[in-house]
Image (tube, rainbow, N blue to C red):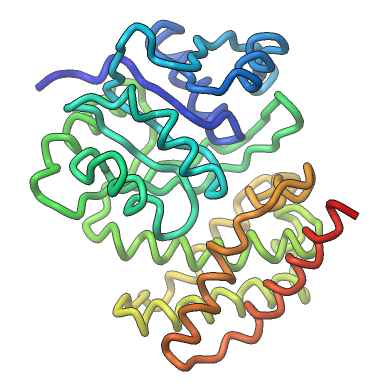
Length: 307
């Protein structure tokens, strides 16, 4: 079995920096390529990237002039940039390249697979991390873990290769027997925590203490849980509470990805969360008043960006 030696990352947000810096530390600069357009490359190379106070000088590529295929491609962009990332990554994907997506939501693997080949995809969820990003600097206390799984036994060789790599660099992961279940469960969490912290313009502390925000988060998650069941994914009793406990364990000053977008006035992934919930509710004739309210409030916030 060919080992994973060269990794490519596209997306230098908080998760891209978190995992990129870790791979750099464990395997060295030559083991990692950061894919970026000209503007982003100039920023990364000019200002550098910092993670927990350490400066990193990544090998940044705009294109694949050398014809290099990466063994593992990590897509860590926001959903609004996914199609651009797919096209920018295409020339780095060879026959044996494994692709994992760190995007929120329940659709990115299907989109990537349709464009780059479903056989490359190992389903993945990133959870339990608490990075705080300010400009080109990221700090975190909890690295979290990656949840991995396959939707086709033909991908078992790719999964084994990925596990061997993660073991070799001591990167925490969990193998999921039912990865589609885990995707929907994580979506349930994101529907609650991302949107409520965004609306309250807060941090994880906002939903860690008893009060209106925490109740709103749980209510939004309960609506998502109901919709998952209507789609044939029965989220187990206690799963919602376990995710709430996970949020309680994070750095109170940390923020979820949607709040990062709000701070820098970027379009958020609201369509992945309440946007999707509203569409599913309409499909099933269900009611999701909390998600409808969150959708409206987040859109109000974003409309003010250009004001």
